[in-house]
Length: 48
Image 1: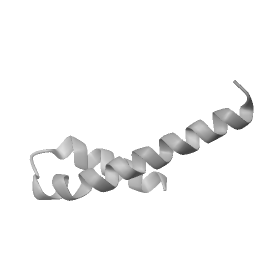
Image 2 (image 1 turned 60 degrees about the horizontal axis):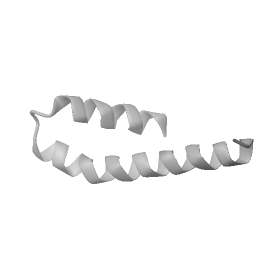
Image 3 (image 1 turned 180 degrees about the vertical axis):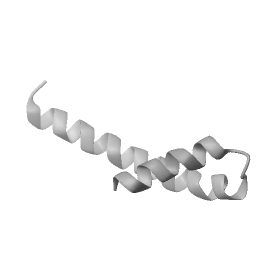
Image 4 (image 1 turned 30 degrees about the vertical axis):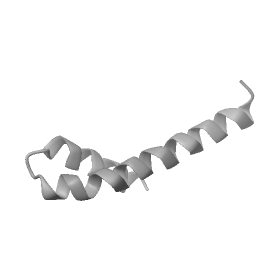
């Protein structure tokens, strides 16, 4: 794999991950028992 392709794949995966987190965040906030999901959201939020 060329470096350019690797970078684009990593950017795409980050965009996909942030999109998934943005979709899951309201659900996790509405359901406090899913604490692991909220921790995952906190980790990804601090990475940005």
